[in-house]
Image 1 (cartoon, helix red, strand yellow):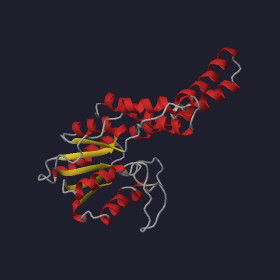
Image 2 (cartoon, helix red, strand yellow):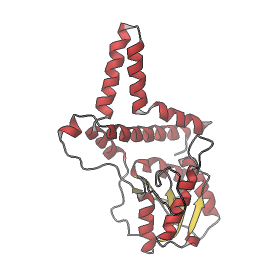
Image 3 (spheres, rainbow, N blue to C red):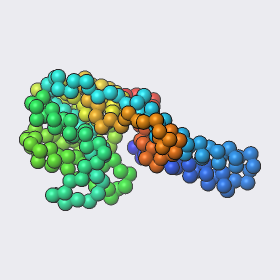
Image 4 (tube, rainbow, N blue to C red):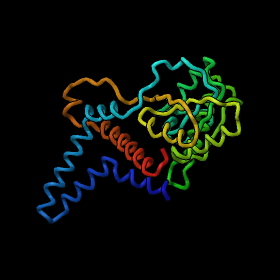
Length: 258
């Protein structure tokens, strides 16, 4: 129930959902006291959450920084949290379409190739509320496939395919590592915007892991009219991801998950 309700909550707070709700409500309402505030709210959401500079500042404030010296230490195991690493589409065995967060497996691959990781855990199951979804087939399995193709030994990869959220990622990985007592030190790979929630969950699960933030979204943006004034659909999408994560972190904190 928590999983389904959290998904629905995030859909409601999507910028496009908020814009649609306030705009339609403002158009159809017969109350003159509500009409103007609702229409102005809709416009305000577009101007604020569609502002590339403001959204980028938000990421600069929220994201956990990547390690300054990523190859300074060896670890027994690297834990990859799945989500967006592969395109969510049907593909054959020979087809691999990487997504926006492919950096989550690229960084551990780099460390493995340098001899800084002994094992790699890929954690993530079906996160869709659609019962017919097979999203995990195009995520953990495809990630395993590409890692093997790029030189990781199959016996050095462990799969966790049941987790539907970050808390389950942490609990299930902790359970796996209890079966491998020789794997004492770990490093956690996830997107920089997700780092706060992820490291909190894993430490709550009893894993004293090190966070490796990757897939950084904050950029050095130029102060030009197109970023300062003109709303952008890309900024709205980025704003949704940021809002999604902040809400998720707050909910997890309230539930005691991180």
